[in-house]
Length: 108
Length: 194
Image (tube, rainbow over all chains, first blue to last red; front, side):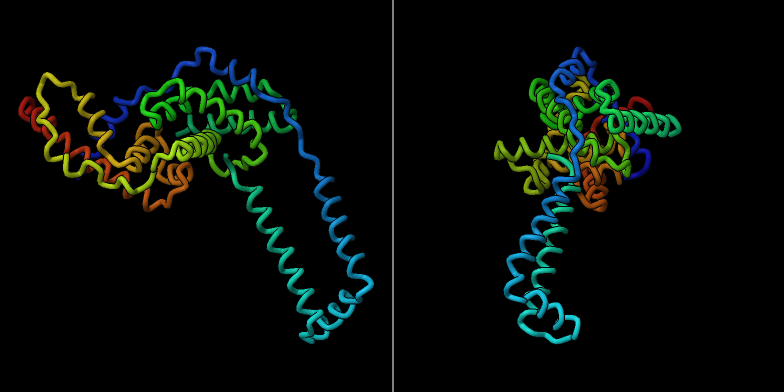
């Protein structure tokens, strides 16, 4: 198909297209349904994250899992505590990535 | 081209006004500026069902209002709006359990040969409409966005969430099929204007 044929077909298609639809009150109907826009506050998310971390820390405090796991991790020792801690960090990172991706995706 | 850039800047300014001041009047201007083409896009996608197209257009604009914070200006506002509209359309389309994919690829390919010879009495536009309907859904959708709505291949790929190569292939194939099916008109024109 040469360039001129392409142009002919495109010209035909454009001619066939009716173009923009007249408003006829459409905008007014949309604006009647537009709800008030609320700016999403960041504090509930931050508070939720802090509360979650705090709750995990408090529940693990008596078992000294965190302390031992952290020390082993830093020391390069692959103990069960260190592995649990790494798995928890990896899991939380994945959840954060997933949440960010879902939030950034548009439509519907 | 300069007009398009100016239009895009105006849209950006209106979006900024909505975001900063939660200004419904700025959004109203955006709706007024784009409703015509969004509704035209939906009317085509819904094969002329004006009422359904207008309902869906309303939903698309309401969604745009809610999601405006997610518009980062990477694409033109109109392109972003077409993308939202197309996503709304797809959602409704899927709910109706209609298949929209490449399963209809090449639909009507065999019928192409048996298309009735266009006669002078039949209007070219009617034949074009029929030929369009014989294209696969993907080809129709790509040609609607690339040619009729005037988007670039890249913008069409963004709106349809389709790889750029696939968009180009559908556009080329669609136009080639139309040319083949409408070739009789071309011959008549050449006979008349040798």
